[in-house]
Each structure stands twice: as C-alpha cells, then as structure tokens.
Amino acid sequence: MRPIATALAVVALAAGTAGCGSLTTAATEVGGVRMTDERPVREGGTLTVALKSDPDKLDPTLAQTLVGRTVFAGMCEKLYDTDRAGKVVPQLAAALPRTSHDGRTVTLPIRPGLRFSDGTRLDAAAVARSLERHRTLAGSARATELGPLTSAVATGELTVRIRLKKPYVPLTGVLADRAGMVMSPRALKKYGKNFTAHPSCVGPFRYVERVAGDRIVLEKDPHYYDAAKVHLRRVVYKTITDGGVRLANLRSGDVQIGDQMGPVEVRSSLTEPQLQLFNSPSLGYQGLGFNIGNVHGTGKKPGKLHTLFAREPKVREAFELSLDRALINKVVFQGMYAPACGPVSPESAVAPGAAHCPPRDLAGAKRLLKEAGVRTPVPLELKVSTTPEDSRLGQVVQAMAKEAGFEVRLRPMEYATLLEETDAGRFEAYVSGWSGRLDPDGNIASFLGTAGAMNTYGVSDPALDRLIAQGRTTPGGTERGALYRRLTDRIHDQHALIYLYRQKNYVVARKDIAGLRVHGDGLVRVKDAGYAR
Image (cartoon, rainbow, N blue to C red; front, side, top):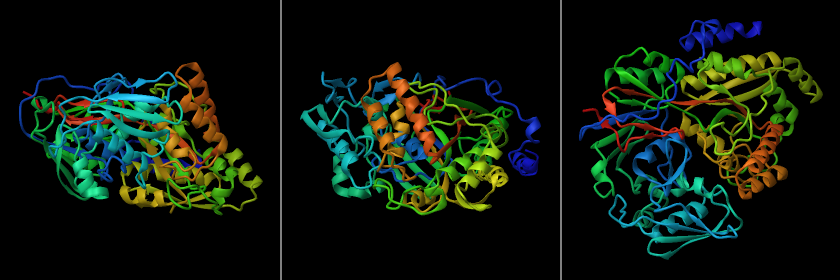
C-alpha cells in the first residue's frame, strides 16, 4: 500500500481527517439508529430541505433518483408504503392485495374519499390508468418492475384487478414505490409527457414551482385527505451539492434539514448544539459500473461493444481486484459506511447471506491483465458526479487502480447530466448506486436483466435472466434466500457492476424541527414535520 499512501493521505485530509491512522468507526459515535422525532409541533411555517443533487423528472413513471423520491414523498403518496420497521402497509390502498390461488390475479381495494391536488377524485379507474402508463409508456423506468403485468383494470369504483403472466412475489413491494404512485388523470390528459412540469398526485403538499438547479416549492394541499394533520404551510427542496455548504446553511438557519449528509458533515454536526442527527440502515448499494453492451440506450436490447472493458471480463475482474473496499470506506467515508460486494442489503426482506468480498490482490490483477494480452497502462475514463464524496471516491479508485496497471481519467459532471449520459450508453465506466428496495428483485431486475429499464451497463446473460425470473415467482423463505445467493454469485461473475460499499442514511436537522421521519428507504418524510412547540 505504500506507493498510494500519499494519494490516500491527500484524500483523507480533504475529507477533514488527519489520515488513515486517526480514522475510527462511527457505529457508536452517532448514537445508534434514530429514525423519528415525536415532539409536538406548531402550525405554519416554511421548511427548507437541502438536497445533495438536483432531482430528475418529477414524473413517477420516468424518475430514477433518490433525491426525486424525497420530493415525491412530500407530494405523491403510493398504493402502499413501508413503515419504520420495514413492513409494507396500505397507503392509498384500503388493504393489502388479495391474490388468487394460482397467483395470477391480484385485487387492490382503494381508499374512498381521496382527491388529487387538482381536485380530481381518485378512483379505481385513475389507479388502473397510472399502472398502465407505468407499464407501457416509452422510456418508463417502471417497465421492468411492472413487466409481469398483462393488464390493470377497474372492476368497480374502488376495486382494481391486476392480471399477471406468472405469480409475482415482489408486486406489493413494487407498489410501495414509484410504480404505486397514482397520477391525476386530468393532468395526464392535459399535459401528457410534460406531466413532469405540472405534477398532480395525492399527498400532503402540492406542486407550486421549480427553478432548475435551484429549488422545488410545494405548499400544503387542501384537498389532501389528512390535511388536518399537516402542520407546515410550505416545503422548499433546495439543491446544494456540496455537503459542507449544506452544513453551513444548517448552522445559519437558512435551511432546516440536510438530506444525504456525508460522514464529514455528520461528524461536524455532532458537535453542534443546535443540530440533531437522524439515521437508518440502507437498502441500497454504491459502486461503479462498466458499459459492456449499452449501445441503444436503457430499456433496449444490449448490443456488441468493441471496447477493451466490454469484451474482456478478465480486465474488469482485474480492475475489481485492484480495489480495497475496506480502505475505501475508511479513507473516503471515515469508516461510517460498510464494504459491500452484492446487491442485497442485510436489511432486505430476503436474506441470502453475506456475499464474500474478494480482497485486494495486485498480483492477481496483473496476472489477469497479462492473460488478457493487454498492454499497460490500460486507459479508462470514469465518470463521476461533481459532489465532493464522488470526487474523493474517484481519486482513491484512480490511485488504487494505477498500481495494478490502469490509468484512470476522472470526468466529473453534474448528476442529471451523468444520468443522461449513462442511460444513453455514452460512457466507459461510472460511479453507480441505488437507494435500494425491501425486496431484492428491486435491486437487480431493472439493472441487470436483459433490456431492463435501468440496465445502463448493457448486461445480457440468459442464465442471469432465468434466475431473476425464478426469484420473482419463488415464495419467501430459505428457498428464495438460496436463490438470491446464486443470483449474487452470477452477478459477481459478470464483473460489470462492482459493488463497493453500502451507505447509511444520514439526515441532519435543526433542533427546532420536530415530527420528522427517516425510514430505511432513505426518504425524508415531512408530512408530520413542523417547528417544535
């Protein structure tokens, strides 16, 4: 490790540390898991939430980002939700789904008396229309999640019947995310794909305006069924990409909540008497991905790429062996995250068992490059977002890979642009991540299934597709856990998506804010929030 000690020390100092020796794990320092604040709140006021990046489209069918989901949590409720214990519970639905004996017909009862923010009544027809749009709209990021559906129809004023090609175990969990968000049929008819500029759902707050790259403004929705329990008058989501600037705004009181705070800012906040910390385990993963077949864009069948990293799995494996997950976590994230090498979190509803993370093996990496017949240094462009965390991660990956014979060139870009580039297949490798879902299928199928809606990597593996299909039809229990163990091993054999670490969800708020909720899905829930009495 000595040749890269200088590079790692620079990154450690940039992260506000004195170097590797002074870094300690944070499990006890952050006081364990804290997800809610039950203090009473007063009526009125504006709450400003600082986001790590600018959300993408405010259209549940097309959206892909965690920051977007945080905004949706304020204005677009779902058929189902997850509670603080990770259990799926009804939200816009009146009860959990009823499934036929053959598993191919699912009936959803819908709550009565609901209205969208534009005043339109929510009924079964509106639910069915949204589900069909999620399933069939060109470019839908929900297409893979709802791929097993053949139809969704209203069979009564408040009853929806879903037909499936095969039994689909993850369905209820899928409907607890954006695929379960119901959009106003009036707004869909009027605005079509421009719904993103005029979103209308059922939620505690309704959309007012968006200034791209700066803020999204919501206000209390008088049509909301539970409006009497909503205390705030307005919520403003403000984009502040630099964690240090988010923390400075928290200190000054210009913002009241900082979302997705990094370890450096979390440690600083612990010494601030006017700030409080919320945190929860993550269902997601972070890492980096290679383009091995994305030639037509996401959602399309992968094709042939002739780049070295696309055609040579040994080169991708060598790159993975050049990386030290534990040291990345220690240097870049102050030991406050966890090394990871698979898509399924320990917090998942299905536990396949811990994946074995290969240790750093420079000799093995060099041997693989020699076997692949390539000349070193091997060039690679790695796209990263412009956040300080991704910049530090990129620098450490660059330094580690150099010792194995790779020459990594970092290309920073704004997050929304990064998504556009990777969706279109215009990349060699990029820093990749996902906020995670309770059911493991939500962390795998859309990303690694052939023609998956978010398969930016261009992976196409019939054996992997068969395992994904089996996972969707296999009931819960040890059999499903064993299947996802096999699936994880098969994913690792591809070396297309290198899992590096699993975050914790850290949210910092001013102490005069109460009623806040931060669940394992990483979303900041502001329905019950307000200024403490």
